[in-house]
Length: 468
Image (cartoon, rainbow, N blue to C red; front, side, top):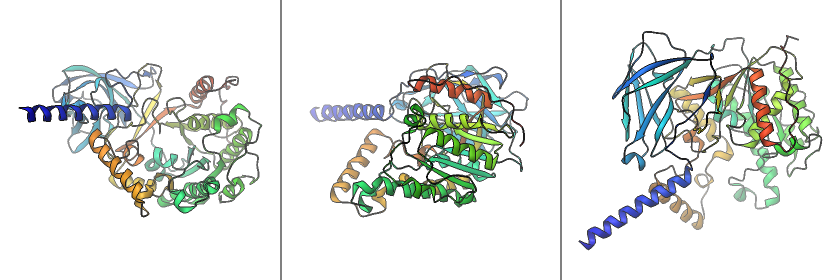
């Protein structure tokens, strides 16, 4: 009897520890309704009847992107094990994982399973739902043509690959990386014992990554630029636009790596006005028809919001065709663990608890198995994303720390590194938020009002652009 009670207490304590650690890694209230402001007239919404094992679609055509608003509830086991929804129709299949203990309305990507068959099957794993009326909302995005040119804005080396590797690898693409990534310290102590050299070494390595990794899928260094600004300091640059920042690495050395035909003076001051001038040069040189930028406010890394603000400022000074705009979220506002679940899985919308998250358009861009393989390779080629302990012989202390970390991952039920991009970014689709240039201006203005001490005057709507 005593032994049984002891085992019961041990199991109960293990369960409580697992829940506590999981909640530390995912600081998110699972019992809520996700809420978004879908702009009227920019999508088509229909009502569908959900039964215990799926839904039957009406006899109608759907766009390339569709999200189903579904009220879900985790089972008791789904508070300890990741609850998942398997969606299938014919040969098409996707699996979407939610936070443990999920209870409420969630918006799930069903784009990959909408095909010729009308019946869509839903299977819950540690997840249930009641029969309900649900909203299926869909968008029809114009595919890119042979004359389109994509410009991806990456605040840091690796952001372009995390957000849009599959998308950009299939089109004529240019990439502008703003930061040299000088704050990264992955494995540098083994390579260089002098801490004073770490910023310079990190900038050299990550700048080189940003210029060469896209070449793996046919985007050569001549189609990519590295602007060489400091990591994590774009907000500081915005606050005093003409003050040149001191940096701990050699900016000229970084900018000299460029081989693109863009006018980038090597010794241009490290100021906000210089950044905007560089971006104007990028836009003048390549005249993109599609621009991919971070989503200010809902991507919670400050550099990402200020990167988009700099692009908006540059666009106001450039003539040319009006590009389409796609926005991405690499750092979800409420939790870095989104998207949930293992690599290769599907997507829900980023968690959001209020209805201020305005959505004009969505584009769920499907990734093939080959594209996911190539994206994994690209991420592996980025020095800052590598696990240094896998490359070099670790010390005894590092081996013990690694063992503790692995054991902790088993106990709490998350990945060894819960927020790693090999899990989060390698997905069955890449998700983009679609806006017009004028909508982008309004989004950028809202971000600046919320994140600067002395916000600028609202950006004027970008005038209709004409070909030069």
